[in-house]
Length: 394
Image (cartoon, rainbow, N blue to C red; front, side):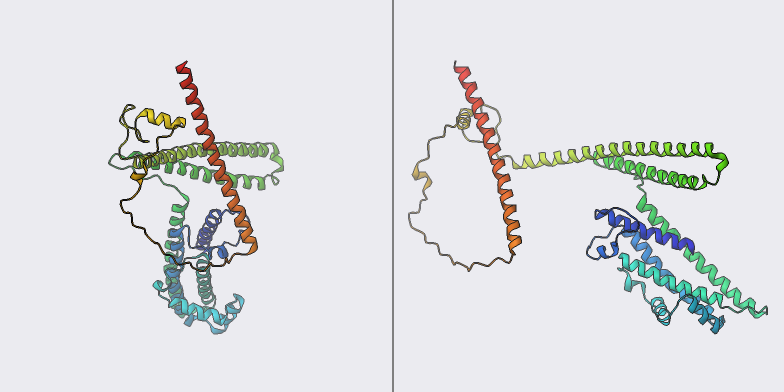
């Protein structure tokens, strides 16, 4: 049972740490109240681990309660009540245990928040305490009736122990999938460049995960040796050498992790740049005009010959079109009517209006600076073209 508590606690801690890091918090001791923070969010990480812990609690409710009900008739009533008081089991806990054992798994299938997971583990802990109280209250007087009572108890505890062991394996498997980054299996068909880059990125993440686990193991070893160092006063020099060697090994692992991280980040940045470049090329090709220029001597996107485009760039505008070409064929006048709606009053407070005004001013300043930069660039280009034309004429 201790192993189940350790596995479930490790799973809950992992979920809490992932949720905290995803919200920008640092992992500290004690952890911030992520249970209250999670209530305001619809996104839940570690979904498979959550479902595994939740289903484990549900599947263990009924077996533990059946063991409790089967062993209760063999227990001494006075001793059982005494153990209830020792382990702080109230009548409300007994009623809740009966309700939980009769609940169908489908009724609470979606209860996978951290608060629900902790509540489920707490109810399972109460059921386990009930089983413990009945075992302690079993009568043993050395008669033949003891054989029947304790045979039933041993058989039931053996079956519930094997079931709990399977649940521990399920939790460990789900935690391993959350912590590890296994490389995808080698396909039988050739991979596309995109899938090959994805496989390479997963391998780099797996290497980082393995390096971090190795670093944690060395940290535990260093802690144990540091605790034992004061007790071995006769081996001070040897203990100091071992501690320094452990520190040097940890430093080498940290440097290797940093190098692995830099390589992975560089590869990821390269892949993202290639993807963005491909998207920009496809967007540009879709945004081109329907009749692109075939050569410098042909028509341009601005209309007309290359000489007309050069004149437009230098500031010489084309002759205006005739007014008759812009007028519509219909000479009749058109009248448009509109209905003016009453102006709605703003619901913003004075501080919100001031903040919005400041944001608008900053936005207008940025737009103006960009426009001025474009204007300056066009003027410089125009000046360069004029100087080139003058140099050719002279």
